[in-house]
Each structure stands twice: as structure tokens, then as C-alpha cells.
Image 1 (cartoon, rainbow, N blue to C red):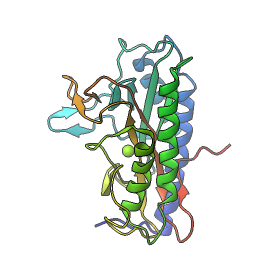
Image 2: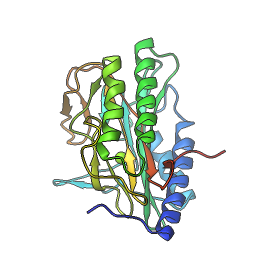
Image 3: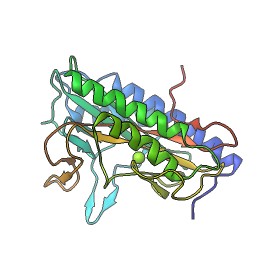
Image 4: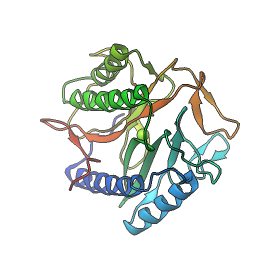
Length: 255
Ligand code: MG
């Protein structure tokens, strides 16, 4: 059952999305060589407090583990769910994805950016640019009457055209009162398959592409997911509302 948000709920989703975008932007401004992911987590905690948001990743349970971060900070070959650590310090040439999900007045916004630290290899820049383009293609396909598979296929096409891997085990998702709602929004698939999109649905669309094979491994910490071949990956995400017309990106940063 895919929740359809009422007009009042949509207003709250807009608010949660706007705050999520502001918090992510504030944290991203601090990305630089010498900064640890624990520093970024502290900044995330402070920014969320300031804006009246509550992290939905902090305390998140999976099997018997409890996630310890206010956000996910994944460096280089780490794809998602990187834990904050004083030992993980950004260096020139690194990339980092910052994935922040937060609840504001009962509703959740979720967004991710992949950033560069100083000068980064050209192939990595290309990976990030294509992942961002795939997010935009997925958003453009998120229109009423289309199916989830239209989003998936639009995203996968960009990866295929550029020879990048598409992570299979991690997918986008419905979002609303909870961080994860139905439906799953895979980054691979066939246009026309999957649930039909209707106005009032809200989805977190989040392509994760890799320079090498898309196979993943989980670190001994039980959370950090990285590429099996050690090649780098990029991740971009927005929370999107399906409307009668064009999709509305709820986590777009407004100036
Ligand atoms: Mg998400």
C-alpha cells in the first residue's frame, strides 16, 4: 500500500524537504581536507537542532545493530551508511557522499550529495556528474501515470551509457511519516513495470553508481557498505512529490 499524502501532509513534506536541503547545504560547506566524518556528524547534529529537525538515521535499527550517526558519511569506495569516525579524515582528492534524513513536524526529508575534496581524478568527476544527471532523469520520469519502472529505467540508462555499475542491493523508497515507505524505487528496471505513480506520492530517488563492478561488501562494523572491488562510487538523492503536472523536488535548495 503506497501512502497518498493529503494536501495538509504535502505541506508538511514541503517543509521537511526544505529544512533537509538547508541542513545538508550547511554541512556540505564544511567539507575540506583535514575534516573528519565525526566533525561532520557534530555539525549535522548542531544544524538539525538549530532547524528543529530530528535525525532519522540516529538510532535506526537493523538486525540487532543501532546506527550511531546523525547522518551517513561515505568516502571514496564506501557507497552508503558510512559511520562517523574521528579516524576518517578527508584528504585532497577524496570524494564524500553525505546522506541526511530528518523528521520535521512528523514528516521526513531525505537528500544526498557527493562532494569533492580539492582536485579529484577526471573519471571520478565524470562518475559524480553522471550520477547527478541520472537523478535528474529519474526525477523527470516521476510523473503521474508513469510507473516506478520508468524512474528505474531512466536512471539505469545513464549508467549503461557511461559504463558504470548500478548497485542492486540498495534502492530508493517511498518516504513520508517514515523514512522508508513503499514502494521500493530501484536504480535499474524496465519502463512500465512496478506500481503506477499517482499525485500525492512522495519518493526518495537515489542513484548509486560505481566505477567498477556493482558488487557490494559490508564492513565488520555491520553498517558501512563499500564496493567489492574497491573502486569508487557516487550517490545523489532528492525527495520528490508526484503531482498532476511536473514532479516537485521537495529537497531542492531555495536561495
Ligand atoms: Mg534515501
